[in-house]
Length: 111
Image (tube, rainbow, N blue to C red):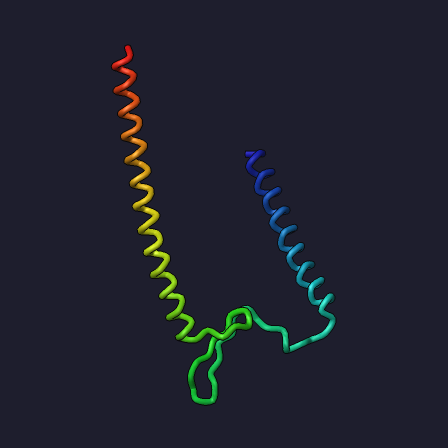
């Protein structure tokens, strides 16, 4: 019982320390910046343009349907590459098994 209380007290103190450290880091970053600059980009931004279409930016790069389509094509190419990789693994496994059986047979013949 005493150990359990000490354990949870230590975990609570460490958790509080982590939260305090995160707050201090945030304040330090704001102090380093020194001023409010709206040109700093957020990681992800989603907004509507004049036509009412939704635009998304990730790390300052616009994400459009074309980029999504290009990424889908790349993914298909990677899947094809993975197919060849799997075939190569199976071939290597077959060669390994055949060599092991051949060596086992030679070992029996030599005895």
